[in-house]
Image 1: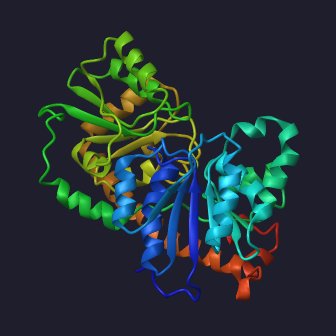
Image 2 (image 1 turned 90 degrees about the vertical axis):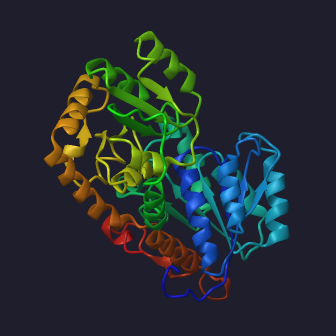
Length: 395
């Protein structure tokens, strides 16, 4: 249980582009069962039924979460009509949007929603391509103002949002990690043997989608500067997977760089390797970083927003796009056993601040705040629009 029962029993819909191997998608999969456990009716809607990872879908169904799909591509505006029909038929209390373009389609559909329904969205990243175009700023203001509240996952994300649009109603709620599930899988993984991890090798793992946001290339390059018994494993899929494979092949690293594809046992994998690494160009708030910190194994991540602001010590960071420095860092971690133990202990204590149960409780409080009494807009919306970012975290 999350804690003190909330006063409202809510009908909640989360809406996202797809259910694939991404941080936002994993977060939704983790948090919806917790909301249901608190007595709320919880459903998930995805724009494109083709973007549906079976394992995530099964996990949600096992927890009694209804998963609805729209028979359209993410960028097909015709899904607005399906959204309007769904909102009117189901009469949700809260509809919570994640990612682009879902948040746009919901904003359009909101002009025809029942008056009782309140919209909430999560801002998952410091960057998005739309902010490159000043001409889109006015449209963005209209879209964001259709939401009763925007939840920013870090203070940097919130500052970036406010500098782009100004006076957007927002609160900061850091993403969380399912520490109970991690502990459970860590215990179970002790009895699991992976043939892919050969005895005598130093095994490195990176979990993450193969996309332009991530930087698997630097990690692959770093293997050129490491001894032959160092092996690299990638868990994830995406549009940049084949180019990454070809890049490893071009460097004659195929025997030591292994691509595992989409995996649902990443917690177990993290516990079985010698080192977890996240090489990335930018993040919102990296769930992979949090999971790695909780894995009882050392972690090294890129010194970029979304990673550097959640690790407990700068010694866990390396300068982005510097493969030689990364290789040196990896080698030092493999040799300095005292540093190894110190970083693991520090990480395990630090990650407790990011418990997903606390995050879920804060989300539910936001929902109650925007609903207020008898469906009126609540006290959360009446917060000063330009309050300090530190105060927003207290929600």
